[in-house]
Image (tube, rainbow over all chains, first blue to last red):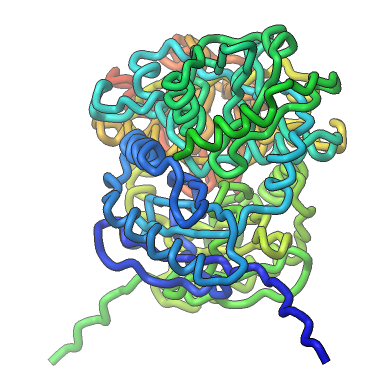
Length: 314
Length: 314
């Protein structure tokens, strides 16, 4: 009697507690509680994160993620991340992840929290989980997107905000002003999640935030348009979080003869482009197939663009 | 030889896990981790909270806190809180708190999170901790306050926002729109905390957010002014979270002959008032002694006002 092949299971999440001051890196059982009742990440959303794609045994676009993590920490007045520790933890987690026979692409999240009120010490951890089937499907099939006002406008004319929100923290006053958290990738993502739930409840897959006619960003992604050999994205900074995937794409594409520019984009620009994409670390690139219900044409070079963005991640 | 009295220790925090669907209420050891790595409160600040003053063995202003908790949950699309369960847990925690011989005023926080990504079930817990010495001192001595732009403006002319952000959730569309989280008391308080850190680093105790000349709210409190028998507060709703302490004060003071009004306030109004206060659940009322460095005069009726606000909490 032939034996059935063993069913492919999904690897368990890999969770590592990373001491932010350079201490130990240790395993956390995903089935046991990890965080204390008075951790600021929990009580105030007071922490930062980065989500990094793990592919073919390596962390993609690691340098840009590391820089933004450091910039976010500085903007929130968190202790400067010891990147060697985070990189070492990431390597450990990757090794463990790929020990599972059916391990594929994974999503690695670094979190740095202001930590427990009762100790005054920052806390940190790293998780590696499988890329969801939904994200994998959206890479292939694209997404239907609605646009929405964000519900608030960031005062982008405040002093120093342009530089600070691009992560060039050394160029602004050393004391981060209250409003500067808008440039950091903080845990305060409830509004973005609410926007995504609203979109899903109304038959869409994703959201692009707009301010009047100005295109801002996706709920968890950067908007990029292609037309001929031109690639455009809304200028990051101010009310638009600088995207690590977009930055990698622009550097790589420029080297390969594309003409890339960061500039204000209008809705008309999106409707007039050859193709519109939402780029982000783990989903990588999802083509916008419908925008507010209007079908966007499928471009001839869809595969070429997908390859370009994937290669840009190194 | 006379025995020295036993030194007064502080009671340990009381932590109860409250199952949001009406299941068990159980003790959590504050020295052990409580929350799982994939809880949305932790990963996205995706949850709501209320902070309630515990005084003389009872929870103050419980009705208004309960209503706002319910309204916040509805705005975020969280399961409707089973208030009987939260009230029962609060009673249990109060009883345990006062079992300690040196228990005084305490702060009780209810948290309801969207919960674990891996289970899809909401999670909830309650904590009771001592009121900090700093808050107790600020009740007595007042606070030196700086004003600051919030860094963003809420689009208050969005449809339904006025009603929704006042908690009258039944009057707006049943599906919460993305932007409606601005009216809920969510865990996304990192920006408020950053503003407070900035204030402290610059020699102030607290922050009042303003938009140009318009007074909005404190970082964790409501602004109230007194002049003669008139009490004023910036009209809540839109970009100003409705305050439970302010609401209790206005109801009680109106019954006792004060003339209370919610209306837009300017900075000039604050400088022209007899006294300006920051009111909130646990600190109750802290008089603003300095505003942007200018000394505000001490009113003749400071004690009377403090008594009024305290009595309003029932």
